[in-house]
Length: 488
Image (cartoon, rainbow, N blue to C red; front, side):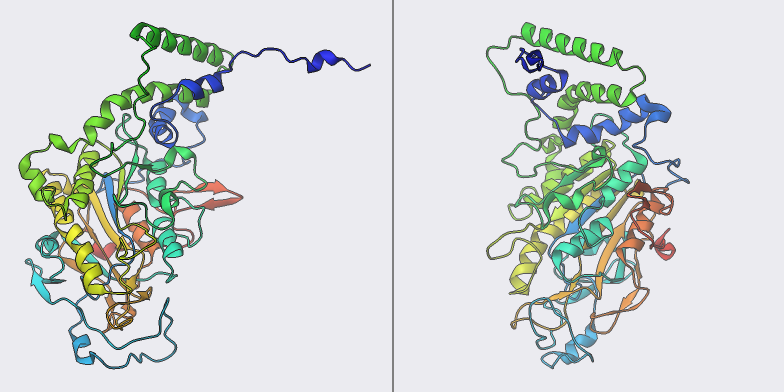
């Protein structure tokens, strides 16, 4: 006869996992996982298998942190930084480069030069269009790569490629790789912070800054950047009139007792010890995070510099000022997004299919002054030399028109720029053809950009690996060369 005592429904004590889940209201999940990286290294020692096998940095770095500005939707190189005066001679003529022209959603229209005039700037004499009068004053700090190439002309895969090195989802972003290799310099803040466009997330959403197969510790932590919203949701637990200070203290003491008892039964379990420390770390975050993102502490002059006093530039101004405050406090990698995915029109990003003048004109107005202010502020604070700033899109735009006023996607040639952190300012690398249609010298893929960024951080990109599914994966896959010509 079966022993029905095995099926008795006995009242169960709340186990530790459910207890933590129930009372752990406040800042949890991925944000706390990112903060755990430094503590795991300290507590886990040789038993910590979430860290790379090699010692990083491999050599003396020129940069300590990265600010990546991602221009979502595809900024037109022809109308911004890649000056093509010969294109004006072809205006209105058929686009016949020879062979099939593969466009994303149109047939080739007539040849279309820049919608904006160009002018030389700085001691280096770099050409910049009138879309960017403020950034034009910064060209002596910037290096332009005019020979960027993507493997896709579709936003989703191209975004994945520029962020992770692969056109498919499921691979770690550059920010995750950097924090996996170097960890954090501030145990009270996430090592990898993402500042989305206040209008919303870009295409692909949070997967763009995902950790892929790396431990969740290295996931990017997104902060809200809209002025009407708190940057960090649920940072503080909700107030409960039934919970007196004395009751809260006794609850925390009970939690410590449970943790200590659980840990005592598992000696040598360093991952467990690190996880327990994460909850204590949350309390420190409640003190450090609000101060770090509180731009009201900055002077009126700084607010004017970033354009926060102007409704047109204030959204990006808040993002850029928050980025400076975060790297100033030791955050390793900050990603700033310009452009959001939206279902209607006008598009809320740089995807100028319908009307380039309205689209790029509006987006550049939001972008120009705040990004220039970031470069100037970093330099004034003495931080530009140790901060690598990278600005890129997923691809560029065509030299022919779409529907008379727009431009279609172009993965064959586009422009990215870098500044600070070991970059040789006032320079350019690579060239596109006379129409900015295809790269003709020194093609640069995301692998090369990533390898160069890692090099400036003191990391040999071939040694930063993670064993996954029988393969030693890396950010640059089996590709990538450091672009030594752009290094100071």
